[in-house]
Length: 252
Image (cartoon, rainbow, N blue to C red; front, side, top):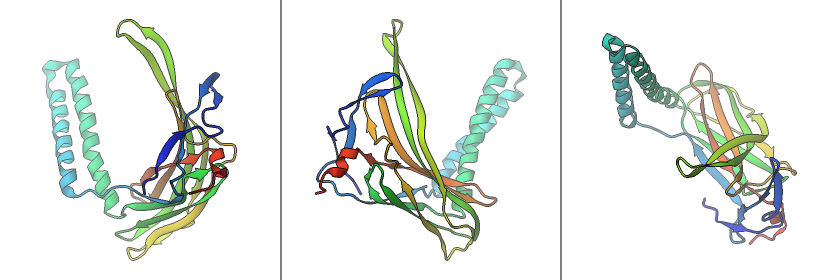
């Protein structure tokens, strides 16, 4: 589902808020009158076949061999240790990633997360439905959901004459977090699916989704499937929260 959004001036959009000791002009995205509030489904995880993972595995193996080659070359001295360590580290990582993905996909499939409605209003309660197929019998420890709101602020520093640019730094802070566990666990057979439903509530006094040149507020839902004695499977989806004033508007 594709929602349409416009940059508007609701009651709290275009207002000035004090963030980290600075007055900032807020710009917010909210649904246009033509956009309907509907449920929204997203898939977490991707299915990779062997052909897609094999080149990554081979390239990682070549990096490992190059790293060992630097280690064995006594004439390079410290340089050999530096290059050898770097090649070995990246090679091991690139070999591990396809193995990890193949292990995960050998037992569980792509999960589907459905939000009862999007965009959400401040103070609104919404339902989250979760469905994930399994390929072999697994022991499920837990499926954990975490609703988070993060504030990202970009600080502008001094002008640097060497490169002709103004220095900038970005900091991200989690301003809200709530974690819940799906009420399902134990042995799941291939003919079954990991499935369940739970609720979250957007706090009434929270900030809606917004973004401008210096500040961003983003809502996300993290999902993690914990399988006993097996690599975890997880992902993240975006959650859109509309300004408070939009709720009073009649929907088209």
